[in-house]
Image (cartoon, rainbow, N blue to C red):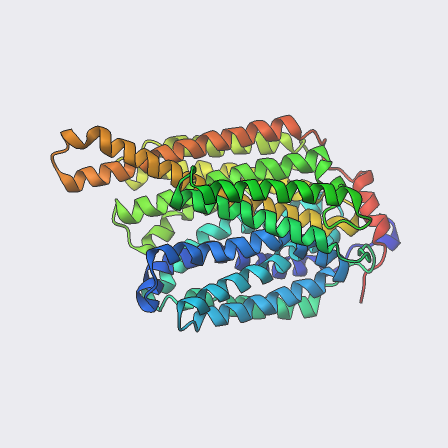
Amino acid sequence: MSETLQPDPRRWKALFFIALAQLMVVLDATVVNIALPRAKEDLGFADSTTQWVITAYALAFGGLLLFGGRVADLWGRRRTFMVGLVGFAAASALGGAAVNTAMLLGARALQGVFGALLAPAALSLLAVMFTDGKERAKAFGIYGAVAGGGGAIGLILGGALTEYLNWRWTFYVNIPFAVVAIAGAVMVIREPAVGLNRNRLDIPGVLLVTLGLVSLVYGFTRAESEGWGDASTIGLFVAAAVLLAAFVVVESRVSAPLLPLRVITDRNRGGVYLSLGMAVIGMFGLFLFLTLYMQGVLGYKPLVNGFAFLPMVAGMVTGSTQIGARLMTRVPARYLMAPGFVVASLGLLILTQIDVNTSYWQILPGLVLMGLGMGTAFMPAMSLATYGVQPRDAGVASAMVNTSQQVGGAIGTALLSTVAHSAGTSYAKAHMATATDPKLFALQTQVHSYSIAIWAAFGILLLAGVTAFTLINAGKPQHDESTAAVEDAVPVMAH
């Protein structure tokens, strides 16, 4: 590396604060879930509203991510990162202080809006600060472990805060995270001076993709509550298809597109977005049904339930930092991603065997395999998603990773809940006549519905592995032309 291309000396310190911000955003997807029953008692909202506390965040976050990614490219990644942090902290304070349902839902939607600015800015800062192949592998390994394990950490934190303090602390906990990350951003984060995209914002693109993604996610949410044949569900899916098709047409014609089609038509990046989205469907299914199973059937308290997921987090950290990061510069990405997804699916296969009195030791191997597999696959996926992309597109390429995860998570929760519901209903009808103990029968029906949903998640994860192996054909990410292209475009650091 020549003298003019020296990397930022503070990049490793910057990584700590970037990972902290990412942890806060990922935590928020699950930390509030465990607190919902207490919040419902306190504010007195209906069952139907409970889902909206989760959906309001997912809709705003998933719908606005591409917009957030492009804002980072236009406005500066560091500046977008800091605005996202301040806004997220303010929205969290509002949620913690909520006196009624409307205030709580508004705060959740605002968290989603600022999260959509923060997440792509964080990942694109990494993409432009770490340009050396081996260093990039390490940095993305740490980031991947945080992105993957954050959800499970959220369950532990949510359980502890709800049990020992108050549900409001699941919101307030974000404020210290944000304060530390803002201080770090001011002191150590410097982004490369060039490589920003100075074109004006593509407003039609923003409107079409935001409305299209919101319709898609909301369609799956409606399918869960109203059924697949409901007129409003079908209407939402049709609207989503029309809006997203119109978005692709607009993007291919405007001079400064929100999502340049070159970002997703690249075979490798497209393969990452697609397989990652599918894998997250499986992962969210696991979180949802195992949480319901551990608390509702095995009788675990929220905190114990959170701790039960720790081996999965350990597996994820090991998979991403010890397996993924070490092998990423030695083997092509698909030889890490495809086997990673398959190993994770084997974990789900073990978990399909749950029954009314399964012990934790029977669940444990499934959790460990799930963590190891997802950690190993997440690592190269995060790096490949922004690898070789032009610096001016780094923010929007990063936003696509987050979009595939958010949309995958929202679809996964709704889709697998629908599968579980119909499996439970048909089981109850078929076995009602032979049931002797009503309480035991109710539990058996519940467990059967979870098991069938986990079977579906297993199938989707296997498909993610096949997709990754088929579509992704990038070689070893060495210090090659694509990395050099990034470095040539970012010769100096902004001070």
